[in-house]
Length: 115
Image: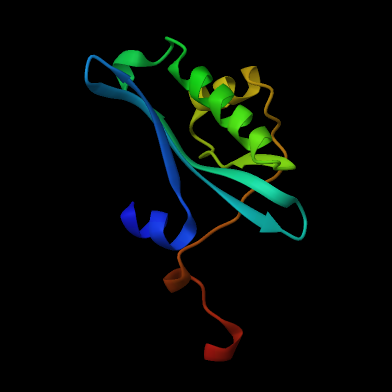
């Protein structure tokens, strides 16, 4: 986390209850040719005992407000295809499913130059 903060301006925000962090999010602001100044949410988690209590929505709303305050044009986050509860949360908070995200570990991809 410290390396991400130092090298990539990663920031964290959290919700604490009785001295325990019950939900947290990590984000960064970056500029892309396709999207302009973009607020990217790297991480958004809630401990299982606090799911369905509104913590995730509170964080998302805080993050959106922060993105607007920073004059970002877009708000982005990726979510694993198997995280159906999270997807419902994102849709309830007016986020759209706007793209597919393709990835693989580089060790699994044979490059044309190495053949």
